[in-house]
Length: 469
Image (cartoon, helix red, strand yellow):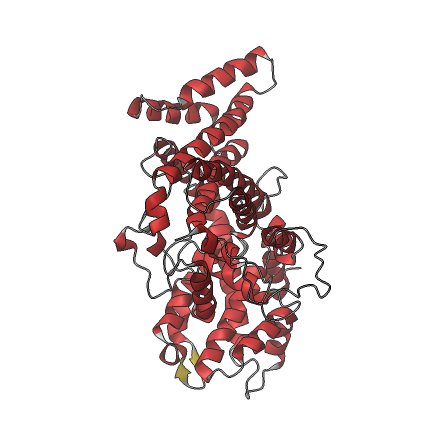
């Protein structure tokens, strides 16, 4: 892969150009992407989608919006470090402008990497997948089972429903403002957010290659993906910037989960100290002595006579760990640069770095202390009830939407809730399609609507439709 091709500024809809030959807009194409994202309703809705604690009343707990801003910041910082490293290697054809472009692309990618996620975090994805696994085999359309109408890829799209694939669909299809091309972002940016450059029938975790773990695009966007891959020269490989985006995401949520867990009372200072002590015993030569740093920060908090030296220590430790892990990810990319550019690298860029044990520990702490707690399980059970109810009502209503079978009064009202933008996108995409493909697109119309919901809206809609308000 070559950087000149990887940093493609091509868009699905070409720009209007300038008839008098003067360009009064001095922004790069990637800076224009940034402003398109910031001004979008989908980006704003991330402020009411929670990262770990859905429907939490605390102002401190991170939302998808604050998480995305953090990922954007880390991704840009990694881009600066790695871009400078590439320049120092005297890679032929790599310029200072390319380094700047990389930073802008990664900044934008961080903002939209979670834009397709449904309400209630990753559990929302599991709930939607679970609904389709349970109900799609039983779903009938005009006396024929939907599963018998669909191709394998159509069925697997729903059985492996994925927020990453939904993000690509959202930004390329569903922002129906000018035309059917969505936000019309650059291909370099679009390819960066495709973490898994495989379809739902190509998923194969057994390969050990990180790119094969999940799907990156639906059947509905397969042609768009192929066009993006061709223009950027990736052709089934991960875009190199995707590794950097993934590292920024992992770094952001694994450190933030520790801070949120501490603030919410799931993880105490002493429990965290003990966990870091175990890591030090297992890896005594680690470049970052986490437990020593935590203790020093606690002592400093006591010396400063802060009201809560434990909180002072944990929060400051998070900042230091983030800086150290940025260095680790930079090294991971640089040391595997040739394999990444050849499309043969199969791991994340923390793999086999000194930062990997710390990243693993942080993820394990979050799982044991937070995600497997009774409080989270209770929230997830409530969220499951909400999403299953909404999926039941919406799919029933959408089944015969825009067909020769008239909807009953209730289904008409349910379909009226769905945005006209989404309906317009459906009609545009359904043009010239056969009955099976149109049904497939109507089911995607349902998931489009559900994924566009905020946590609060999903809860309110459930309550209103059940007469609870």
